[in-house]
Structure formats: C-alpha cells, structure tokens
Length: 117
Image (cartoon, rainbow, N blue to C red; front, side, top):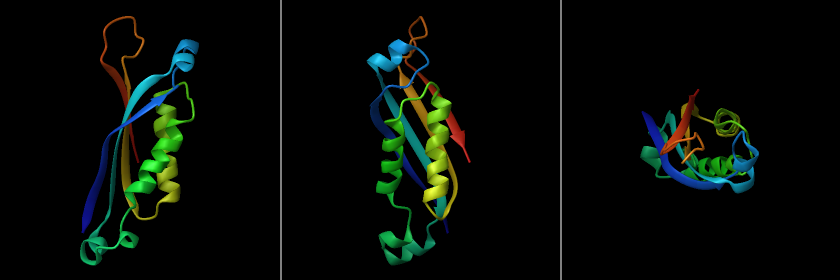
C-alpha cells in the first residue's frame, strides 16, 4: 500500500543567498516536503517503527536549513540526499524551498526551487 507523507509550510529563518547582504541579514523561508513510501505495515500495526518518522524528516530539513548556501538548489539537494541516505523505505521524495521577499529589484512575494528524486 503506497502512501504519501507531506510536511507543508515548515518555516525557518536562514542565511541563504548569493549576495553578502542576504547572508548578513537573513530571510524567511518555507519548506514543503513530500515523500512516498510503502505504508501498509504502519496502516495495520499503528507503530512508529513501521513508518517514516515525521520528526526525523523535520530534523533533517531543520539541520540543512541552518547551513548557509548561495543557492536554493544546493539547500534542496542536501535535504534530499540526506533523506535518501538516512531514511530507509523512501521510494521518492520532493522538496520545495521558498525564499520570501527575494531581493530581485521589484515586488516579488517569493522565489522557489523544487527538486525530486
């Protein structure tokens, strides 16, 4: 029984950006994560041991968001690589990293990068 686990709207303050000002001042970011796994065993057992631990997913995202990067692509890639390497049973995953109010020289609500494996 295939299933999807999603953690949406995880909010972080971080220092990602190409420009020195972005790194010095920081910005608000949102992260949406979607993972696909076989959830049949958990649907029967009601045991955390039989599913993907949401807390572990959140912890990986939080830890990677704390590491400054120039590119959102780099942040998203690090998140996905850790999930793939550290959490067994994940068949596919997608992460969207959104920077609110990016410094693009005009009104822009956000910029985002989505990567998938």
